[in-house]
Each structure stands twice: as structure tokens, then as C-alpha cells.
Length: 231
Image (tube, rainbow, N blue to C red):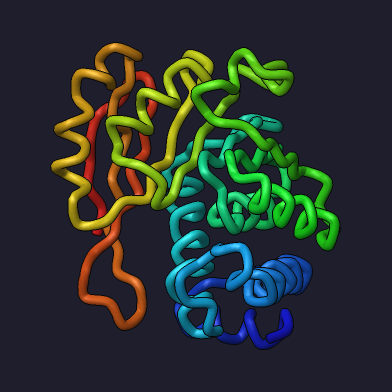
């Protein structure tokens, strides 16, 4: 799969990206397919599953956050918690080149892969951090804190994510959580932690991936703001 093929495929879903971005996304996808089995990056690295379940999901989420107006300051620093194979962090860095994206993972094998992917891309806005989120504040990487935004996709329940994000995020910063059908329950369970760190839900965007009947959500959090639901 090259950039042109990927661009044409994304166009079927109403998503347009530049040729440069499409090629970067294709490079990332090819490297995930090459190393997925040995490193445990994704459960199914077939082209259709990789594009629909991981790449498209990441793209839709980052675009939703863009529409919600988060990450619009000049050059925000954003952490992808539990980046794994680089979804959504690498995708975010490619389609939001003004972001500085730190790919955080506690697995040395996965951060090694992410360093490799970053070396294959023309972007200079990727930083790979081999560290646990709980220990980041006191680690040698702590000088990037506090950050402007935090992303996380399929890594932990909302309560834990909010607890991890609180100490790492600047006042007025934002979070974007990719969530499945338990999104509402998870946010209710996270209520006391959200209150502790002053988080308020900014918005929820509901969508479905191709071939899937189960809805997904992007949940945007910020300190302050109301709640709305788009579908």
C-alpha cells in the first residue's frame, strides 16, 4: 500500500489528506505490518483491518478534536499515553504538524519500534519516551511537563487515564480519549477523579467504523466548559 492508494481509500470515507501526509501514513502502516507479529503491535495487521480499525479510527478522532477547537495554540506539546504501535500518536503528528507529539510507552520493544518509525518519516515533531506514565513526572523526561494535551486510545479505563493525566497536564489543557460502548459508564466512574483534578467534559463525538455496528466515541476533556453530543 502506497500513499496514493491510501489517499484514494480514505477519500471513500470523505477524508482528504495531502500527498505528503498520505505517504507518511502509508509508511507507518507498512512498518506496523512488518513488525506487528514479532512485537505484538496490533491483533490483526491485515491491510483492511489496519486501515479501518486503527488508521481511520485515529484519523477520525484527531479530526474530531480539531473540530472541537482543541490543540489550536501555536505549538502544543501532546503526549500519546500507551502509544504502542503509534495509534493515534504518529497519525496525530502527521496530520497536525504544528503539534509536538511525545509517544509514551513502558515497553522497550514498542518504543524501539516507534523510534524506528519516526526515523522513516520526514516529520521532526515526534519524540519517543520509554517510561511509565506514573513515573514520568520524576523521570529525565519530566522537563517536557506540563503538556498542553494528552491522547489515549484503547489503553485504560477513563478513571485511570484521568488520574494519570492530571499531574501531567497544564491548567487549561485538554485530553482526548478514544472510547467504546462503555464510554458513558467509564465517565461516570471517573467522576471523582475528574473533580479532583478540575476536569470538565468539553464534548463527546460519536461515530462508527466501517463494517462495525458498535459505536465509538471521542471524549474531549478540559478544565471548564459544558457538554454536548454530536453524532
